[in-house]
Length: 147
Image: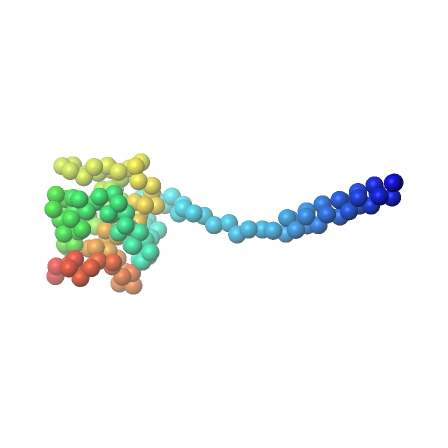
């Protein structure tokens, strides 16, 4: 009986050692799911085609098209022309989205996550042909900017 008891203890100890070694050697890759909060003047998604497509989806989801009519202007100013009332830099667009503007543009600061605001900024700039040419605008042909 004593030998069986000792054998079981040795087997349990060996199993624990093997499991400890396996678990110690198991290092999973760590990926950040959200972009670190950048300064309000630095667009982390500039020229990123995926961010443009995500921004387009968010533009529809947050009903930006309800006022900006898919970039052509309506209740809100157009996003396809050369003149931007409050500026077309990423920082100015970010500010317009988060802080709002007088006479119509509501503030979305605190309601939309910061990474989504930057995706919207990237999409809005692509609608106005302000993103680098390597990032293809997802606009359909009827939405091309007037030249």
